Length: 129
Image 1 (cartoon, rainbow, N blue to C red):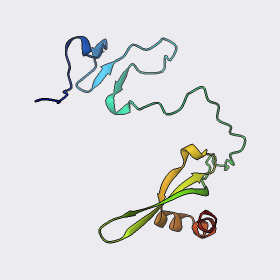
Image 2 (cartoon, one colour; image 1 turned 180 degrees about the vertical axis):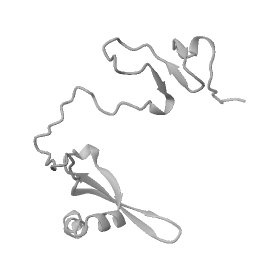
Image 3 (cartoon, rainbow, N blue to C red; image 1 turned 120 degrees about the vertical axis):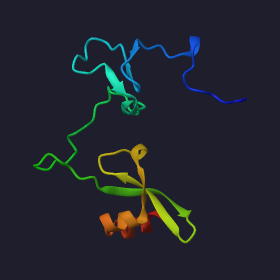
Image 4 (cartoon, rainbow, N blue to C red; image 1 turned 90 degrees about the horizontal axis):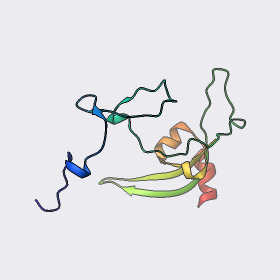
């Protein structure tokens, strides 16, 4: 089959790991300083690194409740788009949340924003449009 790539490549291209811990787990060689970390990981626990661990998070501006929680609130709408299904059109808004930068904004459905934060869309869509 031309153009088909398969898992389980043998030889030079095979991944170099010390041993397998099971059918879907691999044993990795880690540096000695994280002693509390297990050296066996399930494949589903491996994730892409999205942020440099050395970045400091400024917690002085976060309003923490007495039970040590905080609430994310939408600050402003950065963008808007509409997706069409077979029967109706669904509006999506790119929302910047409190305590987050514009790069961490998320797309939210109009219905969710209206139920969870009533009055937010009517106040901000006039500014956006």
